[in-house]
Image (tube, rainbow, N blue to C red; front, side, top):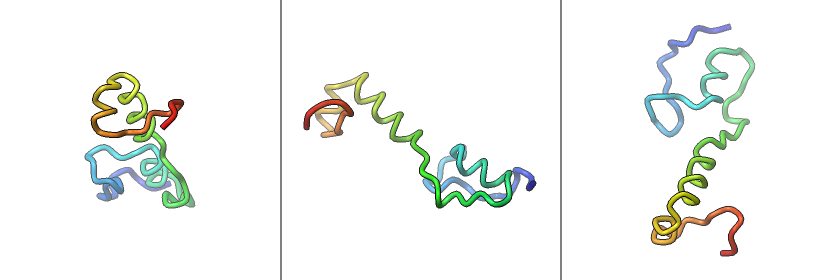
Length: 67
């Protein structure tokens, strides 16, 4: 098991790593490039449902709607 402070940031560059990046840092044998972290997509979908007018202006597809 490796320690947390590896100095690498998430693929998208935020200060907080994704769950997959964190797991790959802590557990040997986990290849972060083989997993898809859907947190960002889930956040976009929740925001698009919460603010449908903004989603329409930005032409964001909302899951469950015809488009």
